[in-house]
Amino acid sequence: MTELPLILYKGVTINQQELTVLRGVDFKLEKGEFVYLIGKVGSGKSTFLKTIYGELEIAEGEATVLGYNMRTIKRKHIAALRRKLGIVFQDFQLLTDRTVHDNLQFVLKATGWKQKNDIENRIEEVLKLVGMENKGYKMPNELSGGEQQRIVIARAILNKPEIILADEPTGNLDVETGKNIVELLREICRQGSAIIMTTHNLNLLKEYPGKVFCCANHHLTETTEY
Image 1 (cartoon, rainbow, N blue to C red):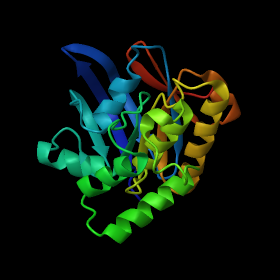
Image 2 (cartoon, helix red, strand yellow):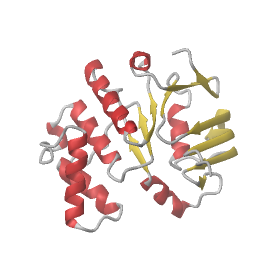
Image 3 (cartoon, rainbow, N blue to C red):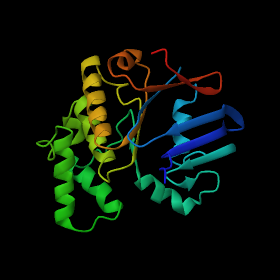
């Protein structure tokens, strides 16, 4: 039996406040793929990601994400879907009133982890994976932008998601730090998570090739010119 794609969109239309942002979207994400989304600000990249984690409804077409039908998904199932996704935002969205360790602990407890040992072991594992094993005691404001983004990635992979959505993860970082973050995401991809990353930085595409989709003129098109 062939495995179903993690994401499959056919003829999808996405509206925001009555306006059509994207139409006729055909998109497929297979296990372990690394996909870039490029396009100008306002072209629909983040809007497209919002439909994947159930923040925005799909107006027309067929859409499945990790086996959930996104046209008919019930509100109560969206939380279960999001537990299978890792989301990395440009603006970090870390809880500023608690340490790195407690940020990660908060997510694990919120997603049903009960055993203290398991929680501690998993926190240690992900911090090591993102190269931040000695930073658990720090507050977010004591970290550089690149370090904060590594913690955000650690948070995103806590529950070993099948898909990671990274929305401009290098947008607020200098070039070198940005490259390090992409290398980290590529490593996570090699370990089994499929990744969709939006970016403005076309140089990254040359240095770290992947499948590229471009948002323009209300369409999402696969492009190989990079």
